[in-house]
Length: 382
Image (cartoon, rainbow, N blue to C red; front, side, top):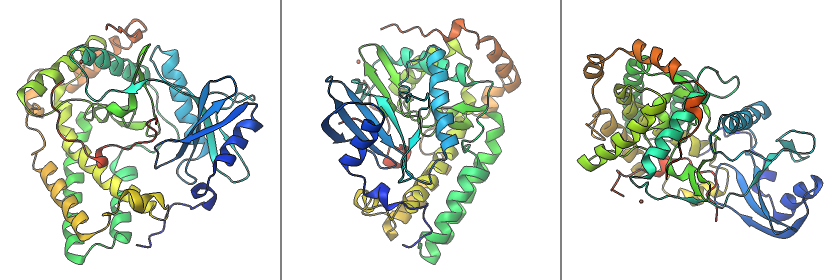
């Protein structure tokens, strides 16, 4: 495979511990010499020990992925959420007040506090209402403003460019290429049919259990790399349980807590299969654009094979056929209860400051399989 990749930077591929320690030393951090590379494919992330026995995390951003303005908008959003009462992990400002810096190698980086929380493999019945209220709080704070530089989840900016890149550079056989394009465009058509029923606003963008840590102070939302404008249900489908009857009960517990702070029309979830399919397509393009990075062939040894693309076609077909979940109400069923406009009007009342004070009252049942292409991991800790 020889596609036209993101702007490559060999300095990024060859970052060494000394390069990271130098960045900290230049900014007044007294390092102990202890450094540990953390799990990350998109960026390069390191845990660094300081002389006072504390630790910080240094995040070096992949060149060509984000502009400085896009990174700054992500950071500003995190601080906005913190000011609104949500438990988040904001970056540490440098001496000049900025949260982004760049060295001569052109690699942007930021410094973050180390959170000693842990990833929760499964949310308990007691956890679900807490997370539901927190997500509602995030959406209340996010509502009413738009991003200026972040790429939105849309067909024009997100889905179609990904498909075009795959068709031009993915080396699919002629027959597979035809089927893949057909099922992808059918997915786009389904999305286009439903998207106008779903609120479009600022969202987390990558809201799964791996990006919610459990700490001594409660749950903490992390990793806003994929923060953007998008359908609000994007922040639900990786968190909510699907499938059997017990999963429906868990989902309802979550949603009832969410509704305490913000209304939601469950018919919006009919967008999820096509939204998930778009993410699959984006995921394949994401890998393909980074194939020159040595870490990607190692992480995805079967990527680009005939078997890989055949499975992609089958997965997209299953989503389009609705085989992933049949428990969401149809748009028609939900519209018989209340209209979309009425729901959006109700949302104004839920956006007040009182509702943004998180009720953090303070473990699970089997969830459907969520695959790597559902999730975009950045850093997980050790």
